[in-house]
Image 1 (cartoon, rainbow over the protein chains, first blue to last red):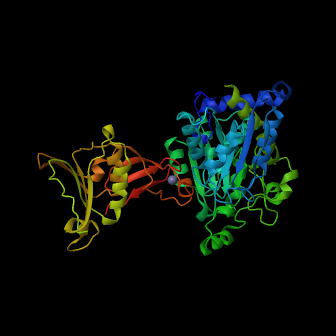
Image 2: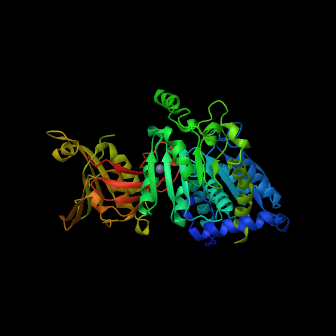
Image 3: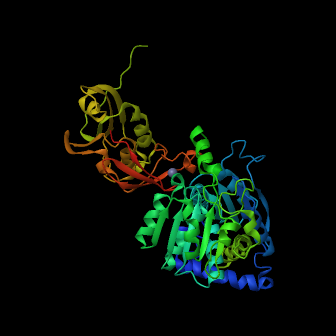
Length: 333
Length: 167
Ligand SMILES: [Zn+2]
């Protein structure tokens, strides 16, 4: 899937073609069913994780994925507290340090837009100008307001596992569409054709212009609705639902941001009662990138966890499998 | 010690950046001084500020005249769409660029017209406050989307498109 030997960074989902994504998805299936074959495939490799904003699932699944393939993955941090970044060290200097300690790949999460590309660029320049002869690949583990490439990849993998295809899917995407990075799966999914999407959100959390623009360009059939009462009508018409919880940590830290939080809280929530009142399509699933706050579930009540509609537990597990496959291809392509 | 003056040569050949915003002169001169000149021969570069200009006033949407900045490069010409002119265009898109030869102006353009399609510059800040370039020291890169006016740039890192204010 990595065509260019000189560029194996994973910066944005938009950098990957339909074919590259299909290759990764198919390879993930192969690896998932024969894990023992690949047990030692990253022996001699080191992974570092630089998570400048908090993470549980992405951080843990990358570390376990790397270690279960034989790599060392102890270096790094899952929040900046207690690291030299708090003392004002730059992200690039921190990355250079991990390279110095032998990192072959750095997975990074940052609140700042473009941070993964910035780090990759700086490490490439060091290599190209001869400052180092060690190449390091950077993986976006959730960057700024848009990118969360491996979440998008694992979601595509999960949809294909469930429906056996990626074309001709019909879905409802709802919740925080503006600040939610994970709902950007619609962009790579639209490469596969015949996608139909209904977007449902509070008007203040409506779809970002760039997504709307790309979907229009690609001729995707989509509609935007702002009425939570419409949920029971839309649910029976779609193959799956994808929720994005309110990304309150990315709202402006102002009085206006506080007001936004209150206004959009629990705008549209799917619960068991609603599901019992409708007849969903065969194979219907509910997905979302965990976690959900029990007090303010925003999107899905916990009681859905134990119904056949719950797709999000498997979705989270697939994060581990997809990241394994990605790391493998990064080294061996 | 008395006052010492270094007499400036007449400009036989060179470049004159005129009607620049006085507060951008420092950035323009930095670009010129820090670039690598052919054969390492840095030309004489002068800056002046204070002459009254109706063009600067007009750019600011005001009546009458306002102080302007002037930068001169002696003995060298810069090419349109070169790195340096693109950077200057992004710093002060509305200033006037004159090419001088045989003591006459042989070409006159507005800086934005001289922009190429890509620029690396520390003098231009991305408009997106969440952009990594506003949180790390170092390289900032922009793609010029439209010469305008207004000159529009797209940040290489966060992809935000923004207008560099022409007035
Ligand atoms: Zn930017």
